[in-house]
Image (tube, rainbow, N blue to C red; front, side):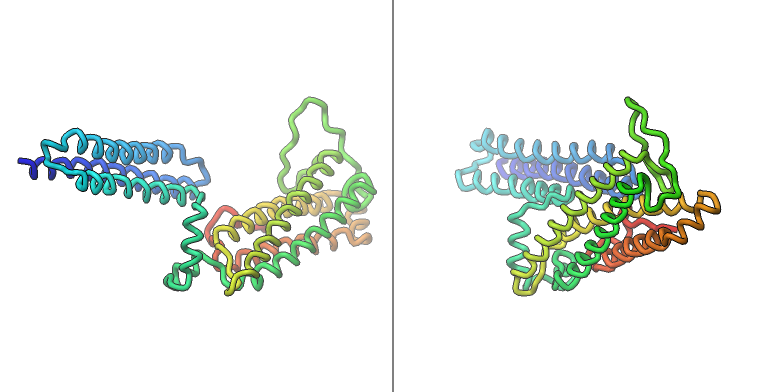
Length: 309
């Protein structure tokens, strides 16, 4: 009968939807698992692609077969419109959810949540918005000025003395032409020109982050509760964490060079207060990280948090 055919037709659509949800859930689980290992989620991409294919194929087949079998199942125009609505809204919600999973939240969705934030549950509101954002972000902005000042002093010292803060360390051999640049870890120095270019690029990147942080604070000041989207704030603060991690590695490399030098070089570094200046710069960087990680919206268990010995 027509009703039995309708039920079988709807069960077929639900089967496509279940397969899409199963593949998507498995893909999301692999994304989280690979993220914890710090490896690219290539297998998860395949499962998420399967979920998208199942969702789109099932919805498209549901609409087309309903149209072609409309006479057999005794469907009128109103029934076809209802079936089309049933087939499209799961795809729409799945697409928005997938975009949120990829950290590409639609602006219209955030606008709706921002407009209805007074009616959101307290736990959800705390995760979506940073209330009194200037109170949390303004001190971080000031500390970045201190870090930027230390970097400018180190850059001027490098340009003036030829290498590093003091004059007790001789510059290494020039970087050979045509060889790849040297990746530096803590305790490993780069040639002078590479070091200066790296520090200038690092300072330019930090300056851009400061501008982005100022924009976030300015937008928060315009809101009645001085709140800002947690996603936007976390994005800027995460970039800042990566930047100060690179700065910390550079400072640790300078300190390690002092301790690896001869006794007279270490004594001269102490007399010139070079070691004290580097220690102060390192402490400011670590204090800035602690202030960033103390904000409630920041992920506590993440690769962006660097534990330094």
